[in-house]
Length: 329
Ligand code: NAD
Image 1 (tube, rainbow, N blue to C red):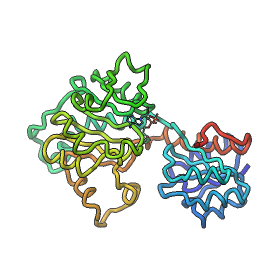
Image 2 (cartoon, rainbow, N blue to C red):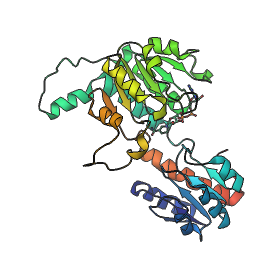
Image 3 (cartoon, rainbow, N blue to C red):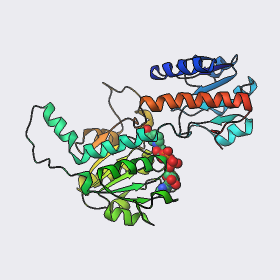
Image 4 (cartoon, rainbow, N blue to C red):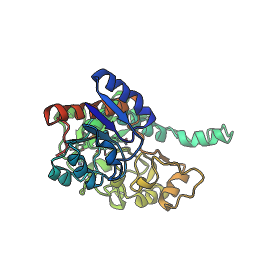
């Protein structure tokens, strides 16, 4: 069995080599996106896996099938770049990695909330400037706060488990509440109830047509004064201009954004020394009450190892059995 792994980062390569050795499978690697041009490199292989932020051109699906490669395994959970209907129509089996480490994202989101309530960015900036005064940056404690969790799936549940350890009160909203969480989570039937009581709002729902710009002028108006917002889910959940207005008028005390609605041109790329032309991103970067991180909540050794292993397991599974439990439908 010979597999070609596209766009392998340096931090993935060791895990790829380890998987290949363990499974006695040849896995060659490149640093290219999978495109109608680069798909030609896969001609002599049995299977492929890939990871990229750009969309997968449907021509790639037909080319893979023409080369006798029946599958495409993407090494991420999100499959926004795949046209599932077109891929299916060719007969190609596309797999993702539905869960690789919920803890990675959950832990990150909670530490972002802690940074906000403990005024860490403001202290760090002042200390950098050798101003060692406290400057009135008096903090709050998680054990005194109510956390509003929107989306209580794998990551939301993991975040709830951590917040419980801190002694926070938890209110939650999900289209499908998790019965197992009900003993220690107060589920609300509509978001207005969550907005009315939450000191911190943490987003863990996928981006859907229904929740596009869920956090907007209307919803912000329903929130407590001084609310903190943490988004490690998807940028489109927040109408960013409205968020900035909420920060400006003091309604929102701080926001931590690991995802941003127009992140595609910037996150994961080196813009040092270049002018950022997106005025909203520029504004976010210059604010003391906003923490921007470039979609890195998932980025831990455990998660990357799992992304590599699970995607390569899926390649092997499809090649050996014709299907995989991680197939995207
Ligand atoms: P999941 O499918 O296990 O859970 C999502 C939950 O959200 C489900 O319980 C679902 O019922 C609920 N939901 C769906 N639409 C909703 C809505 N409109 N309002 C409230 N709840 C809603 O997914 P997960 O593994 O917990 O991942 C959650 C999200 O985290 C992903 O969809 C992705 O957007 C994001 N994510 C971010 C990173 C990162 O690095 N920042 C990494 C992985 C995932």
